[in-house]
Length: 504
Image 1 (cartoon, rainbow, N blue to C red):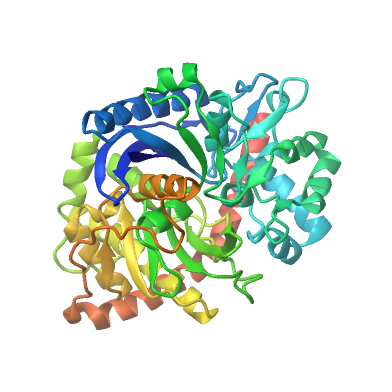
Image 2: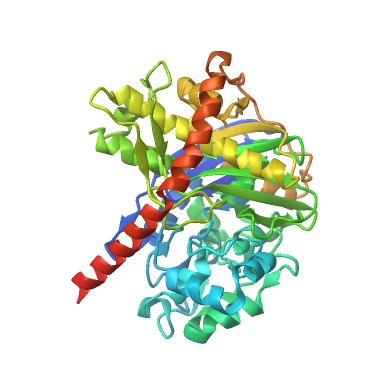
């Protein structure tokens, strides 16, 4: 028998099947594309995304069955903050908005005025920030309101409803809406009531049931199972937010192994046995996977997206051309600094007005030097996050790195040196692996905390010759951010005023 995990992200969908000893049996992936508009909308076509997930599920299930390991359970991993409005039949009334969608600012400001950022953080475990789903819901147009909309679904629970199951939301994904009481394990009446003062339809969010990660949701009926290419009665288990799934899939252990994901967004995930104390106001976000397994995360919104933007700007029009660019960074560290804040600063600084910057450009600056500077920025961000965890008393342990950024050994070496950290690469599809293992937890095959270990590639250690240089660069990196904050605040307000003027 095999376990199948589906990872539904904002830049791609991946399905993978694993044997009950943790061996990878089959994996398939497809890229997805975001739709952007001038008013700050950033959405995904939910019908197309669901079709891709089902197509990959069927392909991987067929490969697993042909090897003698038919699928017995399915787990789902999905991007946080993404939410889609649905009608009474469960069909989408609009695209799914993602974290990069910027329309939640006014609603977040209203919540801040009514409750204060500290109270929001204490209740939800998430810093008050417009990226969270509740603020996008409050900003929604007619397609997000009754009578068109009858409820809201995360990416994973949308699939559950499509498969004829209760569209329940797991605790980790519910927390990333910014409207979940992480202590009570229920929707926060306090947060939703305040949001509903100006957006009454926000109350629809609380109609979704919430359950711990790894809880069985139901079994696939004959017709759905046939369509998906799996045996009738296959169990479907509530998975987790993709960062939690990746943490579990990479062998994360509280105090021993933490995970840094080089994805569309770069994110640090650190586990604890209980809710960490003393982090309110720190910018760290925390949520329960189950009552005895907690995850605390922090990251940069435009990690991989910043690299993708840079590659496109240099004329790399295809994935192969982008890979070629990143394969040839400068051999020596350049006297350059890149702030990769193309979608706001990291979550610790919680500064949505931050903008990207490049310091140190001269007529002699080369493309390989710029490439290296973009890669170094990810290392500086990683070290800043690790230091913040340690400062608040949350032990990080060894850092395992996952995601698309681990395949390029030279890029990973640059990041390790820039961060002055030993990085252990896990090349397996960790989010899908974690989702599959949660399916194993839900069916009694595994226990959390005792999941099969992944294969770990040889680590990348910091280069001693560059240690002093990078210590200075990390200090200058933070100084650059602080120095540009007032400039970026001005640019944000000037840009908003300019856009409003053109709209009249």
